[in-house]
Image 1 (cartoon, rainbow, N blue to C red):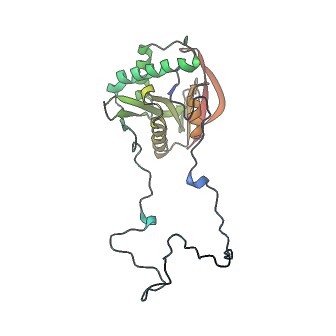
Image 2 (image 1 turned 180 degrees about the vertical axis):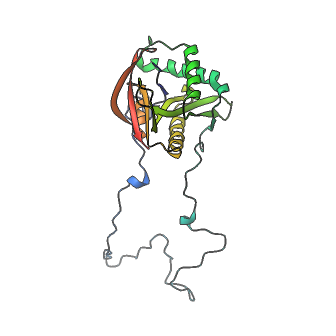
Image 3 (image 1 turned 30 degrees about the vertical axis):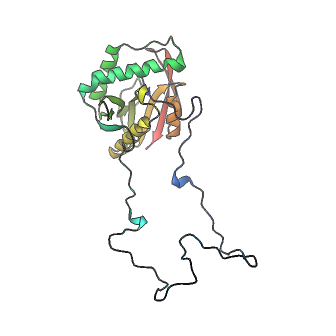
Length: 258
């Protein structure tokens, strides 16, 4: 049985549940009353932000909109598209190649060792030879897509995400064209809490949509801090469970509509 390859840092305080970031679309609507409250006798009139101070408009100025100076653009004309995924992060993103397998194997081992912090010091760590084989299989899978986050300072791989076309089940290898299976999400423990895992997953989900996938799934160790991040990013458990013998731990499935 192939192992779930998911290792990401917790979000927020240790042990605290993840909380999704509120987007503009989640903000409550603001209702503005139509009338104005009466002023108290002797109270000075208040000037609202953007209102000209003084006794009135200058001579020659009309009440219509003023012409914009050449070269200026209205706020609504500004680019509203997504920022580059690695903007503000200490990494750059690139496609992975088979030559990265030795470094990816070492990265996964460091992540495996970090699982002992919550699962117990006696949790076994899979052998490097098996992990190298796993990466060979990931590159060979149908629809394989693997990207890495590279440290801008030293050039080392700080994180990786991989997906391919999903299968009907862990025992039935029939391909499901609209299903993307995320087989790896890893961030080096030395780069946790920098937004790298969130960025890698966001870029991967965009790539899935671009390839026509409508659903995504992943497996992760039950009780791991990674579950908090997946929940915060809109992933949900679907009730499937299994066991991962190389580490002697249970795993659970998460799904997300794209």
